Length: 204
Image (cartoon, rainbow, N blue to C red; front, side, top):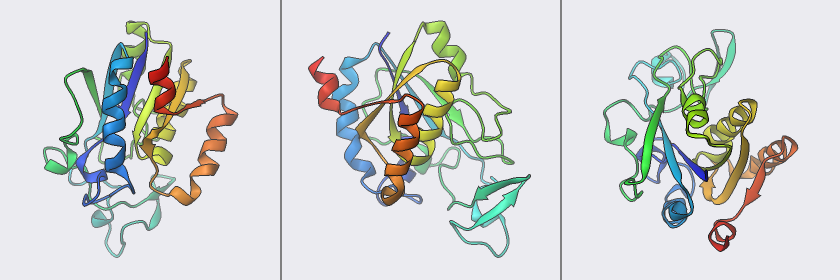
């Protein structure tokens, strides 16, 4: 079963959003074009409570992109983003969503961040995504979305830990830190991730 997972294609990660990813809007038409290639399409959605501990606003004397130790782990402090029920948390209005079979929300525990679509950052709480994919008979998963170097990256790593084969669609994803992304790609290549361009999928 050809499976696509769209990671966090949400308003707050688009240009003008509170945690904008460079070129985030440019991946939307690409994602729309490739949907017809897949049998199963899923999405993830950051869905934070307003008191989430990963927000700099919830720590006196800190500012966005500072780092601190939170519950024994190093945590980047983010601008408030993707707060439950807000426009910023909604999927981008230009994403064709009719074929999305299910949306898996993450980051709901105010005490721990959740980059991956499969688990929180402590690997203590599962979203149920792995079980859903296995029940559907998915084997190889294509990933796209935002941000390529954070939530897409950690979702891919967890998919491999769960026994799936992972493909990264390069032009359907965009990193928060483009200057560091080559290092991330090297890490993914080391664990067997396949890299493709959308035109390769459409040519199949």
